[in-house]
Amino acid sequence: MSVSVEVRDLSITFGEGATAVKVLPGVSFSVQPGECFGLVGESGSGKSTVLRCMSMLTDFWKGDVLINGRSVRDMPLIERCRTLQMVFQDPYGSLHPRQSVRTVLNEPLVIHKLGDREERMRRAITDVGLPVSFLDRFPHQLSGGQRQRVAIARALILEPSLLLLDEPTSALDVSVQAEILNLLQRLREERGFTYIMVTHDLAVVDHMCDRFAVMLRGEVTEILPRDAIDKNRATHPYARQLIAASLEYEGAA
Amino acid sequence: MEKTILDVRNLRIRYGGASTDAVRGVSFTLGRERLGIVGESGSGKSTIGRALLRLLPGATITADSLRFEDVDLLALSEKEMLKVRGRRMSMILQDPKFSLNPIRRVGDQVAETYLRHFKCSRGEAREKAIAMLEAVKIRDAERVYAQYPHEISGGMGQRVMIAMMLLADPDLVIADEPTSALDVTVRLQVLNILDGLVRDRGIGLIMISHDLNLVRNFCDRVLIMYAGRVVETLQASELDSAQHPYTQGLLAAQPRIGGSRAPLAVLDRKPEWLEEKA
Image (cartoon, rainbow over all chains, first blue to last red; front, side, top):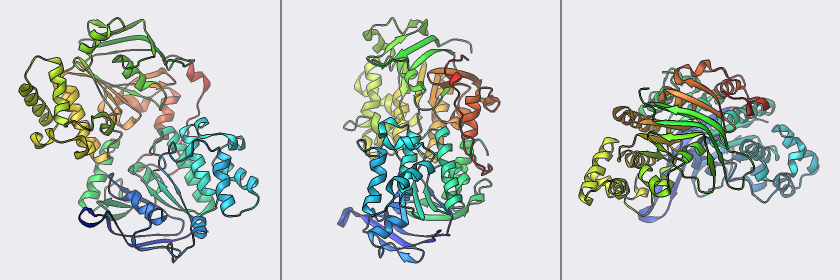
């Protein structure tokens, strides 16, 4: 089932007193059911923080995050995990080095008291294009691309509706990136997932996303449709500069 | 290419304890030009850069020829190598956060290159370092000189690294993924600065990268590496007419702005690529 997402006035401050830093002054955007929405901007602009707030990994924020009209704050933990899952940037850091793929995939099934575990694990690992025999491998026996597939399988195993993707391919080679992007595209077509994807690569945005928000110092400067990239139809000066730099870098300008 | 700076023939590198060679019979020459080396992670491109500076303790390096201008790099003692490394040949590393000493002022780290290789006073080295920081377009170089690495941004840190490596006026600079830790807006600035300095001073440049767009824009010639071998050598401007299926595969796997949204081509790795020679 596809879900819509509404983020309203999301703000967060790190630190206290004189050293307090307002990282997000107030972010708002909405995402249609089944849409792939991009968040772009330079490092430190708060892109990943938005995802961490939405998934409640960081929970001391203010504002509203509504999924199909329900606030993530009001959802019990179990329900929240069945609704949204996150895929992290670095597959070398996000898998436990001493847990086999089977252990990684089994844990959520046990926590959520789901049956047919073997069958569900087999399906998840097949969905991400890995052979079933990989269930008994450890992370050091996998390449970077295979690790990221396992991380995606871990996110898929609870059958969520919303995937938060935090730079899912920036640690990977371009050839491996292509495999992961194709996988994400196929899963979205088959399952109707809603994606929110953080990236700094506008070519990836152009390939994957329907719309994207350009962030600068914690603020959304502009929300643009995908086809605003190649003719640089942004109006905010920073968004224009970012798109122009990407076009120049690609040699397309 | 009026003068050959570097002549590498049949270079083989094996890490200590490994059962196969990481670099298997690589040959190339470099004049006063910008040479790109591209390939996936693990293809041996950074290993080549490190081997040229002899920064691989424990690895076995063999070659029919490994000449840098008038010296045979394999025959030098470590003491002689110290006079080459940093003075005549230097290397810009990937991430300034890890490459700069966190507890020393950045300016002192830049000046150290000059103090180490030239007879001069501290004051002269400081002046040289400040002039070089200005050359890499750091505004207010005096102030930045006195700052610590954590006080400067990533883009500025990478410019400090460039200043440090160019201060001794080397003949060859090896840049190992110089901008992959930087944002796209900053990346272009840094590359343009590096490019300008390298051209003005007639320095030979080896740019090691996995980024095809980068080598297309900032190199003259490109070596494409796969599993420790060079599979193809191309003029950067002719990258699109690559013949080798591996190069074609890498180009096709790259999403492009304004491209179709059809599934990206996925590399179909052929076992024979491992053995064939360019």
